[in-house]
Image (tube, rainbow, N blue to C red; front, side, top):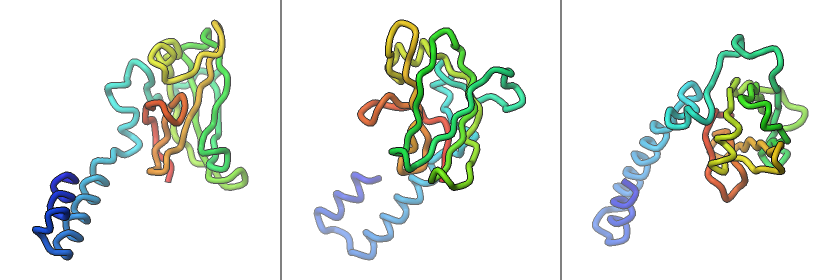
Length: 155
């Protein structure tokens, strides 16, 4: 859709009003493609991370809260022996604002490390990072230049 839209604009074969109309349709299509938080993480990442019910978390699980004032990310060191890692993630805009639960997850740390979704610090430890992108999604992501796994949304 975007290629057609910009091609027509470039060649001048449509009017300005039609261009605005097409842009609105294109935006609506993009917004409808955004999956809601219950569908995240996507099925193709099931081996890496799965959403679990909060009631199904084991007694020893991690609980992290990220906020947008800390460069829109939250990270920490975890040990490989904790795999599978159970974590309950919350997010907030500022350190003093109210929190919103993103979800509870079961992470396969060794698979995340082998595919470079997390950074290995040494043989026993890795750095797990959650990032809040500007479009609203929360990702497990090694860094800004690395691909990430969408796991939830925060608006």
